[in-house]
Structures are given as structure tokens and as C-alpha cells.
Image 1: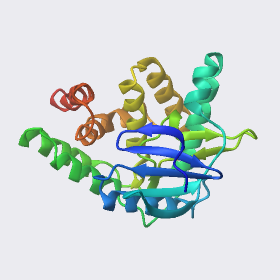
Image 2: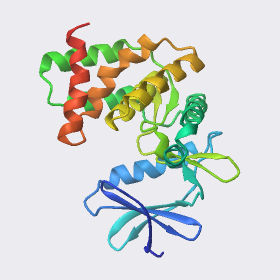
Image 3: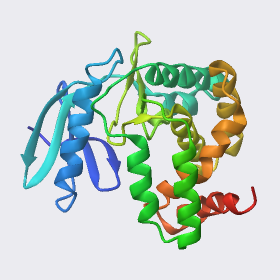
Image 4: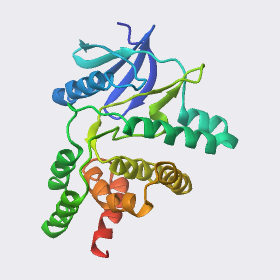
Length: 249
């Protein structure tokens, strides 16, 4: 495997292209269990009706773990939005349609979203009263088993030249309530400083899926709390402000 052509750099990982393969190389101190879980998630999602790159192997490269997948040639929706701002609304609609396709899938062997969120809330720095309130809210939300991407945003959708859409980065995939996944995407747009697109996205999703906006908003403090475990100080500050909503409802 040649690690020469860098196509993306992310926190704790670098993505290379080697011919028709994509090689995601993780930092040496990255959790082996998380890497193997990501590869397993991807393999499980391959069994659904979704277009995703197939896992070709999990290897050690220069002392670091790497996931090898099919290379999908194309541009991400994020790139297309940047290059064609006049078509942003059209691309946003495509993003929502793809997310609805994801939520239409079932994948019984995926980890449960509620279990993951409960663990994350328990490991936050919030006081016991806030944690109790968040756990109680989470337990009170309807239990579903839809596939949830967990990090769904325009940079994780590749559009091929023929228009086919492929969804990448399944490290956070779970099964659970789709509205939690929507709340996560909304917060990702906000974290990127694009509140206008976040609101457009939420309105569009709720309209297309016939979901009450208030229902998705009920998930916001829970999702924000579970995401506040990671991220930089500025992100944590923003997410914490969403968690405080529980005090006023």
C-alpha cells in the first residue's frame, strides 16, 4: 500500500488514495476497539440497501491501524455547495432525501443509540441534577430501531459523476430514533457557523418526513450533552448552552 496521495486529514486520522482503494490511517494511540468497531459498522451497513464503500481490509501500516475501503470517485456535497452556491438549496434537499433513505433501513446488529448516549451523558462534566434530567429525558423518548449515521453532514456524502450518492464515515452509526440523528446534523451545521442552513435543513427534513419540529428540538439538549464529551473548548461551550435548555422547559 502506498501512502503518498493524501485526500483528507481529520483529527486523529489521515485518508490516502492508492489506486482504487481508500486507506484511512489512524494515529498510533487511537483506540483499536473503536477502529475495529468502525470497520464492523461499515461491513454491517453494506448489508443494507444503501450505497457505501465496501470494506476491503483492516491492516497495520507503519505501526498504525488502517481501514482499507473501495475508493469512490466524486465530489462531496460540501464541495458542490461551495462550488455552486446558487444550487445550495437543491443540494440540501438531496442531503435530506439521502438521510431519509438511511433512516428507512434496519440493521439489527448495530449498537443501540440510547445505550451510547446514556454512556456519554454519564461521562460529561454536568452536575448530578442535570445528568439525571438528561438520562430521564432520554429514557422517556420513543424507542425506534432505524439506522442512524451519527455524523451526517454534506462532507460525508460523495456524489459520483453519474449522480449516484455514496455515504461515508460510519464510525458513529447506531440504531435508534431518527430524530436524534436529525438533531445531530442540525447541531453540526450550527457548529460550522451556518445557522441559516441549519434552520433550512430542519424545516426541510420535518416537512419531507412529516415530523413535528418540536419533537426534533426535544432531542437537542440530549444530543448536545452526548456530543459535548469531545470537541474543543469553543464547541463544548456552544453545546453546553443547548444542554441548559433543560432548565427552562
